[in-house]
Length: 58
Ligand SMILES: [Zn+2]
Image 1 (cartoon, rainbow, N blue to C red):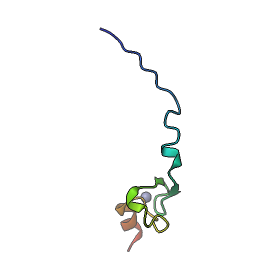
Image 2: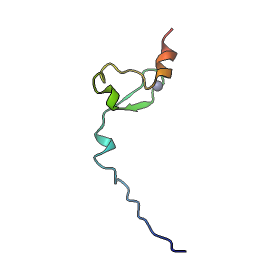
Image 3: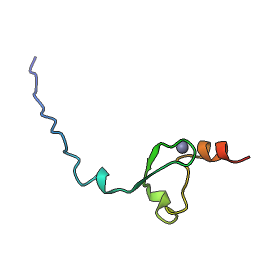
């Protein structure tokens, strides 16, 4: 069996994920990363998911 050695470099993702803005969810507090669907209303996005939005809504 030939074991192929793959070297996983730490920090290989440089410049990809890090460039996206983040902010905490208003409901659960988990950091949410910018998504394409939010590009038009990122400033208004407060919750990471519909579940969190529903949890806050009456
Ligand atoms: Zn949330």
